[in-house]
Image (cartoon, rainbow, N blue to C red):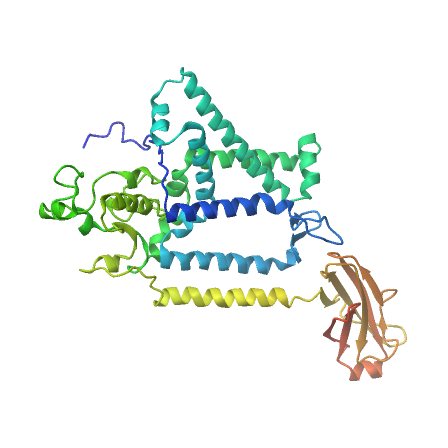
Length: 473
């Protein structure tokens, strides 16, 4: 090992990773997820949805109106509990998937993976397959071909980054109108700042950093090992089968047939290096399980294609568990869900999803709060009667304008004073504060300590809220 100079190198030079394209079931699954994810993300702001009091857009974050429109569901800031539950469900789902299938989320569903895949596709479309791209890397910038191909790639990356950022902004307003305002210079400054920031960050993550985001920036790759079990299914190289006793070796004359290789102590791995060439993070899966592996399965497709050409059995590289691989005769790979950790994740997911669905399905069309004004707690009037005051807050979350009526049960007639607010008209998403007072004569006040407020909407929904009446006793 060479001695480090000047206290050692803190950074190493990044070697560009130029992955080769491969066909197979895992590649097709990744491509299907990519197209599905892009279709949802880029088309959802343009999906029309009929609304009575908002633009006809299926999903829109109405920041001025302090609400989030998600199809027929309207979410308000006071529903932040739903967001907490949703984040909890997402975290547990991630742990559940990791315990069963390793970093499958990273390999197929992570935004970094999806956009990096799209950028690699554009790179291949402009510059060609891996050998052509490697040749371009070695050529000087003075060559016209390199300038055109690399320049076209950079422009395409920039356009995709801009389109990604612009689409994100379109979720925060009526998409057709906001798009026109952006290109005519009439949009708010925050829109342009967001577009520039997200365009740069998307380009940096998917074009420049790529695998470094997974390796050094994302914390998930570091703590994922805490969720692994020996029975967790992830991408493994069957080392005993691939190496034999004499190690792997190229397939050449006298070492092509499987029986010939076994006679000389060699395994099934022909050391073609295709599994390394297709890896988007540039690792060699034959070196064992590594935290940088995102379990995308492309090396499985690559190895199986070579096994087919050599007429060897598939599965030299496959999704499997350490426990199964350690057996003398490994059996079929199966998800191991019969463990306390996996069952705990699964039960938590079911309970939290059920509770969230129940809470959303049983949300009342309006919210209310009744607070007694305590300074002073009660007032004695000149005729000896006692008065308590209350503050009633109503929030309409029914999805349309509504009229509410307020009454009291357990009080004598005329004791409740609401001013001119016995019926209150409230627009959707708005709140109204009503000042109410209850006045009782001394004899009635001495015998009455509690009563009920009744709040009824125009659609018939009623809530009953008990209230106390305080006296000098």
